[in-house]
Length: 233
Image: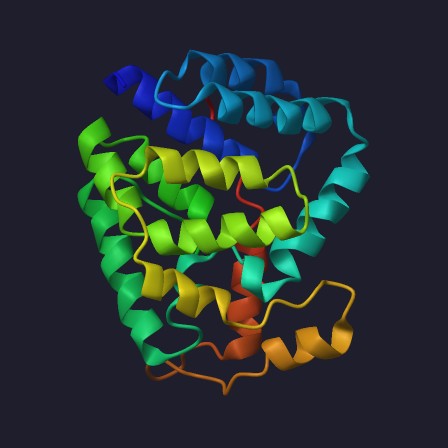
């Protein structure tokens, strides 16, 4: 994988995990070209990614947006916020956010005040600015989360599974079995199971210092981050 190809594939996968907008539909041919040129991805994964790209290109935008919201906004077990799966709303997540934001800033990536640093498309956008070896090593630190998301998407027969499988293929490390098993043991309700969803989101509000936002504001920030525009490929 060359430096140029590495940067482009991380940007392409980041774009595929953002909230679908007309701009994303218009960029599907360009993204497909990047996918097809990435030798680090097995042919079967490139084919599966192109299936998703075809759906995004030809689908009704409102239907695509509804599908995205049901998967990634309403289903906590499919949250694209990495620390959601390992820290929940604990105080540990606050420090992890600070550390990750610091990593971005040291690498020259500035993020908006409403953006949460652990949003996976944003993380991938940062990886696209790093050397290929470093990017794959950093991605490997999330291997257990990526694998758990891929398995949950497989269970739902979602074409988005291909994006997570592609990330798993690019990561420099494989997930530890015990870490993956721990994540997969967590509740995984369907988005139309409202009672189960309510139980899954029932956490005690946590503040990270004077005047810090509580759970409600955290969720609002999460939704806003989920609307981050797709990066230019």
